[in-house]
Length: 311
Image (cartoon, rainbow, N blue to C red; front, side):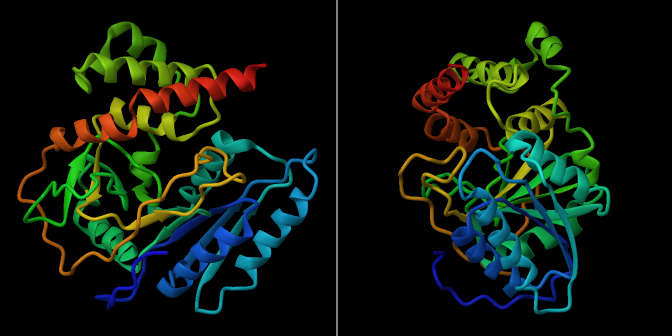
């Protein structure tokens, strides 16, 4: 659970929230309680359908949906997209986000295992106001994977190429660039355009392999497609100087985060926010993230999972 630190919202929350749920009642309940405390005026709930060949999954899916439908006790407009069939991560999540932006121009996106501190909601809201018309900004994320390194000593956040999605927010104008089929990947691969993002050969090889696997549908992930879309447009992500969202989804019911390890804690951000005076990607911080979050061992596990799926 996030550290209990007093946080007083500077104003009411007026930003809509998309809550992506599936089959995990325990984590869903925790994340919903954080949303309930923040009291967004509009709550969108998208739920993938159960796998019919998995015993007991339909009951879990039904239970998860009831947690949200029976729990809204504040003045809130609730819209739902409850699917009968299972679309999987790639199409289930991206389809839910597509639906969200058919109705909204911007918003916060939380999955059923991303537990935010309260300041995360207002962090996103304030930065929506500041960067709404700045097309360089594609993502506002609540994640910080710098392991205590201070990337911006005097500021509340920094700019990155990594669109971390364990609790994040974006604009419709940015999501319009998303292509789940990654149709431009062959051209980008042949022209060597990723070299403009990564000069390091190991990082370049890593992301080339990842994008190729996503393009060939060998990995069930919408997030790699979204990273590709952001990089294609040179989109920047805002990352907080302290971590604001805790991933509580590690375990056997998770789709991707099945490895047992301690999830990062979530903290409250100090207000008022201190904004940077310039907008430049922090390459040193990004290089650290590449080494520690996307190193070869992560790739070996991904390749192993792909091979198992293909058997």
